[in-house]
Image (tube, rainbow, N blue to C red; front, side, top):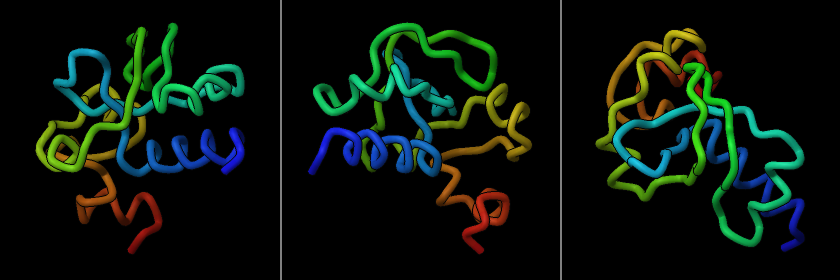
Length: 104
């Protein structure tokens, strides 16, 4: 798989599952720049300042494992900024969020 494909996969998963920061205590949404995406293939993470939808800046983003994606709370600030209902787990697993995502 090419580096661009790896980065695109990371971003696609992140749009549905959201990301965690180093604290791993909430799921956050972020729009990653092309420059930030260039580091993804080597680390399967993003290091450096990343602006989250809630307005915070994170030094690190990763896609959490399955149990974290199912059990972690979504950041209420990110939810508010994007028009999602607050709640638990990845947006793709929440029926109300699935409608917003166009997943049914």
